[in-house]
Image 1: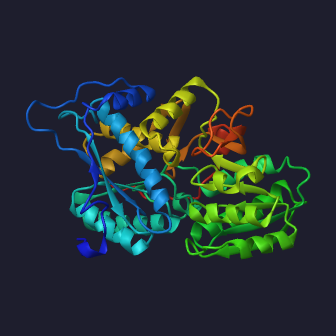
Image 2: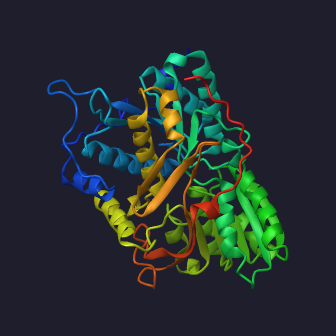
Image 3: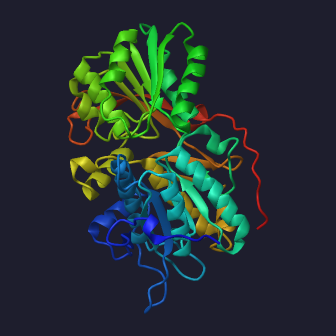
Length: 447
């Protein structure tokens, strides 16, 4: 059985901040429910005592260098939970139950994440959510595998929305882990579909964060460049400490000295924002092919220098054409109107919808039974459809690539974080075009 020391884990707020939003949500919540394709309905359950909520434990960095990424995730998942509860909660045989989202601060450290996991389980959570670090995801997968073997009566599911090291659904795949983001190789494939057409490009510099994900990005960049643009030279390659570099000017000086016409990076959070800011200050005029260059301060940091030069891949972008997509984005901005809060992930909404779908179809509200149904998840929202691949628990969904431009330019109705710059969609990949094979050998437990 897990043991823990409370002093090793900080839960945001005085002790813990949690949100339990019932169907009697204010009008904003009802409007959100309509965007998801479901009308708000009365809460289920008998009159009197409120039904016990289904607890979701969000384990992320809410302090430290990547606190802004944790807060962005919190807003997205909070919105998703509100939408479900506004329509009555999770409809189960014994009556509808609301979702409850509880946040645990891992401070950007794997040890803290494991302490948070232990505490969350002790406090009744059986669904764990995490994503903003592949190394943390790997640690959680290992811990959950061991816990579920030791304590089958308290088994836990792990839903991953952003940890994209390909190994997590390949050689490290687990029955208890489900990934809802495209992994690094899939994202790189989408970027390369644009890079391959940049015929003037002759040289690139690879830079990334020195951990499993960053290493995987650089490795796959080398491999895919060799396949699609063998004429492009890699003139530099560098890994840097995660979340510890405050000044990227020395790195940018190396990039400029190399003569690289473009940079390929998987950097995220402040490691990306500070990198592009340093590039602007140093006058670097090459392109940035990024995984996450579309928000969290990056567009504002690079400003005019990024127009036509910053390329980002995502499952969805605000300027994806279509009335459903536009309504989805406007509803999020209505819920979170501050410019700094403008970072919405459609995949996180689909993840919560897939979980609810699985819980409602399961024979009982138990991890293995829910997992069996989650393997068959097929959900749609805002014109985007995604399905879970049972063989490796890798979600399959369309991807898009966008190029930074001024708001108001053709195809750029919406900017990012009030910066005046947004991303024009230049490539859309169908789910089947983004899909890649897996080496996973899934071990499934007995129900």
